[in-house]
Image 1 (cartoon, helix red, strand yellow):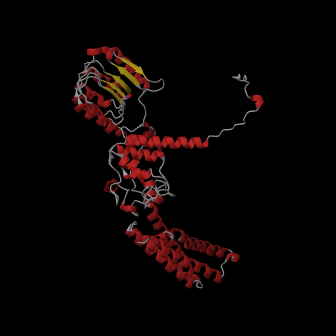
Image 2 (spheres, helix red, strand yellow; image 1 turned 135 degrees about the horizontal axis):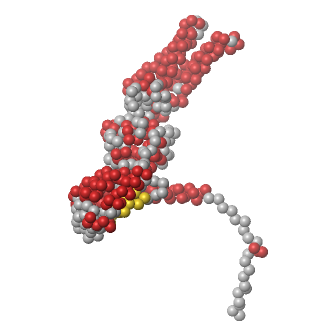
Length: 482
């Protein structure tokens, strides 16, 4: 298909509005003329209107035929749209021939307007996706408009949210499927299903699970708006910052095809974005009074220290360091009662072993964990995998080696690791850092900050009234050398 052919074909959306507007106006005028004599159309005017509509329909059909040859549209939907378009053209010609026969003319006009609307709906489905009409329709009407199956329950809480079906797919449906769905497949790519995303198109898979910055989908989103490869194209609804953050997070989390959203321990920003997107309440925090009451009992029973981290939140910091050898695996199991509220846990110098670390699987809110001077080994670090929110880990004076450090790659938010005396090599730590930190993302953030700073500077206003001689500070005259 030549560039000239495609150039002409892309005038179809412009030209097609001529017959649409003319025929709709004709229908309104004919109805109005039935009720008021002064509004009744003369035969010559009616003939002129229909002639304009026919010429517009011919132009729209020609441009549409050329546009449909680029191979990006669903063939079934395209064939139906073409057939209905030519049917509209034929009916319009019939209207011109029957304009002096009131009975046949009126019925034909009604049929023409119905076919015209049906044709337009199919055209809209091709360019915006088959579910575009139902996207914002009331829930009860969506099944009737092709917006999904009736009886499929919507999530009522974030705990019921499926990560792909409820979080990722709606973003793609709203911003991408119009060009990459069942009715239109630009570049041979479909984004209306998980299988389509993985299969990819002419340029390969749309995503690289675990690596958002290498994913074609994300790279296209970050291209300048005037770049011809930017997705979505300029002029179409663009994804919000939250939309892009959600897609990046999902890909970085290995792009699961299904599963609980909260089970992936998303960042608070992602939780807020999804809750806002779905109109759902944020997860309830642990009961502050209940957590504090349980903490007081545990302090007395176990001889440890538990302190609140904020005045108006339930989060706790627990330290068993002073209990020393008297605090072991059995005592660690007793902390299950406050596990939902624990942000910091200090087990340094205690008798906790690898077996005891199994109890940490319930402490998914932990941000800081100290295991220094304990009997923890490489095998014990496997138990830390559920702690997806952990940012700081202390392994000072333990038997941990390079093999144990390799188990920490699942802790994607780990940013501080304290080591002293373990048999850990710098190479193992460097490898862990490479697995946890995406330098490309840091560079992109820095570029965004620099761009924002330039934008701020460009908006700064300043004024300077200068200074008169009388306002200048008095100075002593310099002494001459002569």
